[in-house]
Image (cartoon, rainbow, N blue to C red):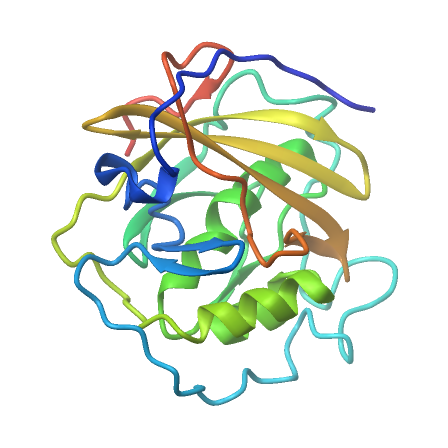
Length: 252
């Protein structure tokens, strides 16, 4: 089944990654990947060309250990809770610091397992996909991004391109004083058993903005599906209001 929502957008002048108010709007990334190069969203940081140690090839969601069908060992979720896109935020959501921002987590929808940098085991539901779309990209500013990328980003040209470009940007595991937008809400653009597209509503002092994250059900869990150009999310675009989104409320 699929769900579609519409929203009005407010155009801003110039490339989105050069608009000062939104240089940190993708706080879940703190790294903005664009076609033709990488633009760091960390104010004043220097790009580095050295390649860090390769991510571990073994893990709960690696090709060697993740099952083709079913869930990895130890992962259990209630996948019968959602029949459609959530109209309200899950009641059991709490907010946890992650990298340069805070992310929503749910005891029922995930991530239900945290093993080092891997926050994983999401419900095979629209709500599980929503939470994965918030949490997985939020790891990408910090030093564990390689491990998370290998385990929780769909393999292929897009992932290879993201890794190549991300390696040129300095890691940061905490805010550096620059503005970081917060998560304000979400909408389920489309959902199937094997794929989901989630739109995230961001809020900063400049107002609202949106970006879209695509996911695939792979190896028994939700993983981010990058574009071929290496981007883990769509360009950030300003919007006039929060209309059409399910709001998180004042919990952040």
